[in-house]
Length: 296
Ligand code: NAD
Image (cartoon, rainbow, N blue to C red; front, side, top):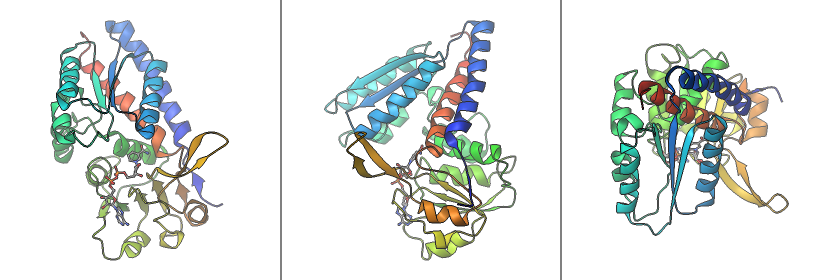
């Protein structure tokens, strides 16, 4: 293997250590404890696992953590009432509704209901609009923010770099394209956003200095598509099997990892790459929200 592994788990630990100091300082200066409400609807195993990790991280940082679990059959009105309660609670600085939601709920209605100043996931149109306009007060969506943080901490030069993103979702591809294309540190890249309508995906990928795969298709990005020395960020988390011994799912990314690691300059593993960075950014947004409302 020739590529350097971008260890998201280690990087996120460093970020969480820094945040721990900030939490202690906030408490000492203002008596403020960052408050995070996590809301899970239903029992989708992946969602349960994500929420469990977020709650554990919030606890470890000494947050005031409130976990809400609604049954999959809950009415949308119940979820809206739950959000409203946390919108009004001054001890809560961040609200996270774990997606995806059951089919009978309208994701857009739910995201709109979260107060933008508590939208630590960065999915509310106010925060996405601010991101688009380069307004630094935006809460950035956690996965794109985590990817940028990882690239910056790894010393990857983005200024003038060719970045190719595979996938145009509202939570990863689109906001990441805006973030990395913006003028300023951690930006100024020339970004190509590819998707299911892209004619020659391989040709685009081959041009990339930084290639981000966020399609949710295991092994979509082939090693032959990677420019030698490129930085490869694999966002995909695909359940490709089940390990009978550990009782855990077998996860795989969107990149053909072993072969890609022979060509790339740096590459993220799955798991242990982008995932932990996403959680670290959620905590960072919550601490920032608490700092903005210290009297609460
Ligand atoms: P999504 O399904 O909303 O979007 C996928 C995008 O990929 C779509 O825009 C689609 O056009 C594009 N796409 C799909 N197949 C393609 C193909 N063959 N060629 C080109 N483009 C293609 O997915 P999402 O929510 O953005 O998530 C993508 C992946 O990232 C999933 O595996 C998800 O589990 C993972 N994810 C990981 C994290 C993390 O923190 N590690 C966070 C969010 C999502």
